[in-house]
Length: 315
Ligand code: NAD
Ligand code: SER
Image (cartoon, rainbow, N blue to C red; front, top):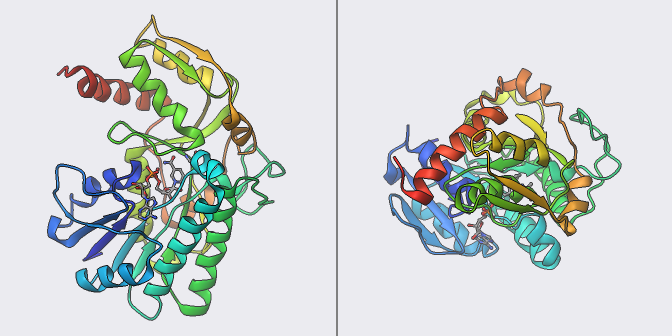
């Protein structure tokens, strides 16, 4: 991991992955790429490029001599359902471009899959690593196809590509970009801003979640693991904590007693109900020693403290 390219760098995960990598890599060794221009504080180089443009991507990889790519540019589940053609194009063409450019070169790739690879017929409790995978969203279909593409490029072309199936990611720096799990972030913003939130899934909707600190650490740790330790070449199940929307709201009221959550489920409810409630990530724990640090109480304490400073400017 000497010269790093992060695609989708302006997004929820990319913007925080930069901070994590800067703890052990110099800023001039990292370049970000996004469809959108650079965001302040402009610490690393930035290229405004469409990931589906293979030649432009190839030039950037060569210009910066990247030996590591964190490929995060994507459309997420809710936005993907509203633009299925675009979701297929960006998610599949983008991934294949990255894999093609890495072929025959010594370039290591991280690409996140998602709990969206599971579908209505997958077991919803303690969902195993290997099980029925019949996603019924375009986003989930691109993630499942992407997993198989990664395994194919590893087996046929020896490309070192590593992947995890992220659950919903909760964070305070950059707001999420249009996923089904966005309610688990928005609820904190609205609790701090207005003391009330209208949630787009029902109170008993339970999904696996993870705090951003754990998510970016997982990305770095799987990339740093010995190649021989990596036994799953599609994507590893990964989780931290599962809770319902009502349990999340209750945790917030421990800090903000006047907070109220209302529920008006929309089309994202159906997507949430097709995904697991809890995940078996024992393979990741055994193979590359994955361990989460944040539970719901820890996430809530940190989120409210950080958002209070961000929104209200309190120290
Ligand atoms: P995000 O929507 O916040 O960010 C995606 C970024 O990609 C955006 O900055 C966007 O401008 C950029 N982008 C979109 N189309 C592009 C294109 N054609 N060319 C270049 N850039 C483009 O997403 P995120 O939450 O940071 O997710 C990053 C990755 O992690 C995605 O693959 C996503 O599927 C996966 N993931 C995220 C979560 C989560 O809860 N955030 C959970 C599971 C998996
Ligand atoms: N958080 C993501 C979404 O809801 C899961 O991949 O789309």
